[in-house]
Image (cartoon, rainbow, N blue to C red; front, side):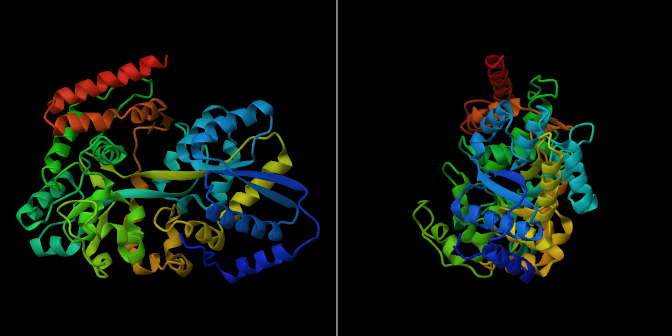
Amino acid sequence: MPNSMPRILPALLAAVVLALCAAGARAAVPVTFWTTEVSPDRQAVIGYLAQAFMVFNPDVEVRVVGVEENDMARAMAQAQAEGLPPDVVGCASNLVVAFSNQGWMDEAGNARVIDAVGRDRFFAGTLRRVSMSDGKPCGIPFNGWVQGIWYRKDWFEAAGLAPPDTWERILKAAKTLNDPANGRYGILVGTRNDAYAEQVFTHLAKSAGVREVSPEGKVVFDSPAAVRTLKFYAELARYTPPGPQWWRGRDYYLQGRLAMMFYSSFIMDDFVVPSVAADSLTGDNFEDLSGAPFDYELPDRTGMVAILTGTRKAGFGVLHALGLVKTGDAARSEAARRFVRFLFREDAYVTWLHMVPGGMLPVLRDIVAHPTFYCDVQGIFHKYRRERVEAILAGFDSLKSFEFEDGRLIPQAARISAAGVIGRMIVDTLDGRSTPEGAVREAAERMREILEERR
């Protein structure tokens, strides 16, 4: 990230200048905002936004506190026990849901903010991700990233192939465009036990309706749909570059040697900023890659499919949310709502998103219509036309995960993920140590063991 301050509208810039010059009365009502954005550059931007808010709201004083994501649950529990909770939290959506399950979140306040921002402005999938089965919102969707298949549009068009948005089209394209004799491969999927392989499998599995654990806490992974997904994954792996592959395999795509890859929207800056792409343009990471110059035409030659269809549609990604916390103090609650509402102002919201272009995507449909959204410091969004950004954001409408099903948080899924069960299942199948049927059965048994260990 460059050190330059994100570009913002003149009104917000003027507000910050006034805030820095103001030495008068401070806010009478304190609002404490905990955020998992802890890096110094991001803390600087968030502090800048808090200062701007306080100029417009001199009766409120916002204190920004960075909390590491892995520490947030423990810190929140301790604060609740001490009777000193924050007023607002900003973190992964599953944490907000977990806090709501503990009775800590102000669902009515969250609903009021959503309605004030405009419920119809949010991607539907993001609202579902923070809502309980009764529809009450545990928090307010704020930003996130989506995963999808990035593909060479020019190669697809030359071969007469449709975009890879269904299992059938993905497999057909992988077979058709795979040409290892000439150093070209059909698709990148993970072939070692790591988070990348699990994320790719999860995206496919959710498009087939696979579940790991039922809302009642019973392991239901050993299903025909899971076996079918693993078989399909193994078939795709036949058209993946050789050797253990993981996210680093993006080098093949950036060097013009790969037709498709599963990747998150964090890849957007690699396509348009040579300095960011530089470490993927060398021959240092794979024996069969010798390096390549930066391809300035690659963004225009690349398409992205965010929603995959097997037996149903599924997107995959990570959502971050803001959440109003119950404090028992009406004045603080009202001030906290005003602060959160301020963060959804176009200028403030775009400033936040520009902290990580591609990694922080908007959950509001209409933001892509605003010119300021395309004016990030690095010029990343400027390289993407509106229709292309909208295609990426479409993944938010169908977000699926093993950790949240039918308005219920499935906390067991996090323990299963931490144990690497899915990655081990994939590797055992690809290495021939087990059949897909056997690997799924063994994975399900391992899941049961993990859940039993915590009883």
